[in-house]
Every structure is written in structure tokens, then in C-alpha cells.
Length: 334
Image 1: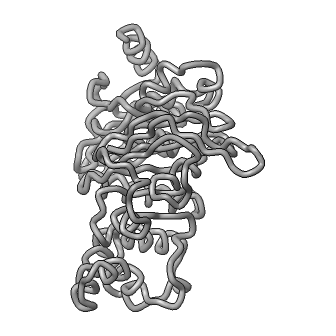
Image 2: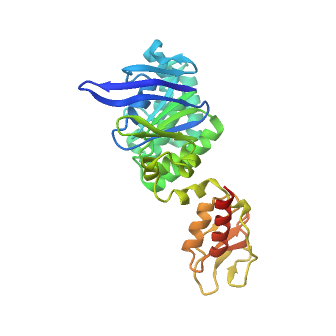
Image 3: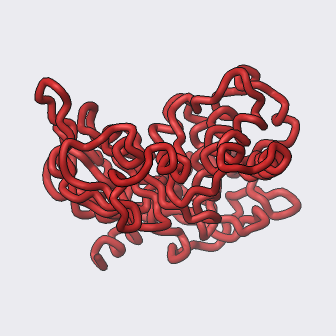
């Protein structure tokens, strides 16, 4: 657990970056700091590994004040991922990842063997090991940055806008990779982002800061969307927070209608198009979110979302008016 105990950071000249911040980042979970520019989110992150020291207050990791620990030793126990990956340009991908294990006393051979395993874990094959950072795409560089941060198997990881420098398609893939890794590893992660959608998607806990480093609200994504503390939080999470909240409920309980002759299927029962040749516009499974089903029903040329099973075989239809009724019942039940 990471604890902020009445932490204040005032820079020379009197500018307050963090103002009496008290909160706890739970062990094994991802906590995302988000807020407008100048709200102190990156300053808060960097105080955890003492790249910045607080003016007053304490930051503790598992009950131990970081102020009483050697800077170098502290940072070797904390993984750190930054925007643009921050790789050593003159070292190969393999040696970038092996850097920290070697600093911790592993032999070159041991460190490189472990590094190969980590590259595979973040979705990069062995053929990338001998390349240099300049030979990689932005998304590949970020994967190497995550692998390097994981190399010493740190219990804590800090991530400073790790996905902001890549295009939306690559970012979506990195998000999936991150969620998969975190599910497997269960690290205590503190992340900074300027993107509220990213915070809601990746965070178990979201910390919203106001200008001047004041805490506006902390809670799960669902809590922030359903019960914003004030108008500032409501504005920040967006006017469409009702739609975003649908991301946290699956389509498992959604009533479906039987297939009709209007939906054309291939030999395996997979949907091809509607009878007039219009595409189905995508499909969903019981594990997908209500937000996806809503989007499919809205964008469908016939106003119907098509459900499929694990093999892609169509097994039910959800007309938009049935979806509206279901969402109304869902809201009334809260």
C-alpha cells in the first residue's frame, strides 16, 4: 500500500503543486491520477520514488517512509514507465530490459535470459531482442519500456502517461496488454494520465485532482460516474458519464429475441448481413459491455444488435427499443 499523509509540495516562488494530499493506493491495484494541467498529478507520482521531495507530509510504502530510504535502492524496487519509453538508444532491446537485473547483481547471462521471457510476456517475440530502439515503432518501444520496468519484479510500478505518445489504434492494443499483465501480476501501480477515458478503463481506483493539487474525489470508476462529488467532477468525467457507466455491466442479463429471416448467415451460422445487403455493423457476446451493445444498436442500419456465441455463431437479437427498456429497468433498480 502507498500512503500519502498530508503531503504538500511548494516550489520555489510559492507555487503550490500539491496541497495537503491524503489518500491510500491499495496493494495489488491500479490507481490512476487524473486532472487538468497543473493539478500536481505528475508531481505526486514522482514524490513516491523521491525524484521530487515533498515540502511537508509523508509518503509511505507498506508503512515505511520513503524519506528515510536511500534514493538509489528505493528506485531499484520501483518500476518506472514514462512517455516515449525513455529507452537507452545505444543499447539493444534485450540489454535495455536486462539493465536493472544486472544492477541488482545478476550475471549478464541470467539477466538476458530473464529479459527474453519478459519481452515475450509483453507481446514481443525474440526477434526484437537484437534491435535498437530507433528500429521500433512507438507501441513497440512502450512495450519494451514496460518490460524493463518489470525486470526487477518490483512490487510497485509508476507509470507517467505511458500510452499518450502513440496513436489511438496502438493505444487500444497497449491497454488490452496492460490489463492482461496486471491481471496476471497484481502489481501496486500508480499511473498518471490526462485522459479520463483511459483512467476509467485502466484504473481500479481513480484520483481526480483540482488545480493547485487539491483532491477533488477518489473512488472506483463506477463511483465517480454514478456519484460525482460536485460540479467540477461531473464536468471532468463528462456529460456522457451515464453512457460510460455502461462499460461496467456486461450483456449477460440482457434479454434477446430469436433470430429472424432478415439476418443472413453463412454456413457456420455466423452473421453476414441483413436481407437488404446492409452490414450488421458488428456483434457482441454475453461477456461484452452494455456500452458496446448500445453502440451497436445505435449504429446498426436496422436498429438491432446481433449477439453471437464464443464461436461467432449468431444466437439472438436485441432491438434498440428492448435495450432502452432494459436500461430503464437497470437504472430504476439502482
